[in-house]
Length: 401
Ligand code: ACO
Image (cartoon, rainbow, N blue to C red):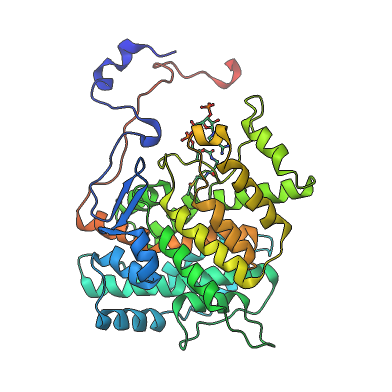
């Protein structure tokens, strides 16, 4: 119980808002989100238009620098990123120190931190050249080490960036190319992945982005701040939800594939089971990202001719939910995580790599928000609290405890 009189001096000046549900921590020019209307814009451009007409690296530039790049700027950006895709060979001994069973998100966070050791110069965000170099380094090396977390888990040789193909196509090659066989990623797959990365690229002050801004507000470096963001993204209430969707589908399959039974469970108020991948805290009519990604998922599945019972269960659940009064009345629509997991699965990406995929997509958002926070000269993040612990008391000697 709280002794209100003891709080009087400070509590009047403090707004208590656990989870920051109604508190803004900053102003931002990066992303506009309207949950009621299902609107998401990056720097004023709708994600629908960006997903259709742009590509991931262009969107990275847009988020970080505020404008779509000119042809010369794209060329320069790509050239610089390529230049920095080589990762110090000593990083491999760090990777070798992890057991093959380590979760790729833990390895990714650790490796991103470890990059600092090989790039020790603190980045001054007010120095455009320094910032540009750091941005390109992070975008280049991150893609490579993300793929290495997967290759390491299989004990496969690590692949290197191929300067003759694009960024997203490179990711597929880094992940799946074997030394003994030629490899060429399907263009439909590359396009779907590009869209997925665009749709994940920023989502204003979500948990991981707020973490990046918070850590960066102490003037910790860009790589250290991003490493903290990766840890925040890992949780199942945030980026980890895409993994939870697939685990749910696998469970339904293992128990006979009865989608109707699980629908009934989800609606049963005495059962804590929820249909993962349905509903969203902010989007109450639909998740605009989900609409785009559903189309991409359909294209990928038909192009690859995928015939997977897990994906059949997903389609069945979607069909049932979209026609079900319980889901309709509560505005529970499939969210971006429902479809992204389906695409990743069809591409042969293992379930525990799903959140790493999210991290690759979210990286430009983290960078843009870190840069904005520093250039706005925001103060160090330091929330207040309302103390509810013991009043002052005397120390108790060991023999009296
Ligand atoms: N399955 C079944 N019922 C659900 C679901 C679901 N997935 N989601 C919400 N409901 C029901 C609730 O039981 C509640 O019913 P009631 O009004 O009869 O009590 C009603 O819908 C409202 O639910 P809330 O929990 O109040 O909604 P909230 O906005 O707080 O939660 C959340 C949103 C957390 C996303 C929720 O819908 C959920 O748990 N979904 C499944 C997990 C998931 O997919 N998370 C990923 C989100 S996307 C992202 O993070 C990128």
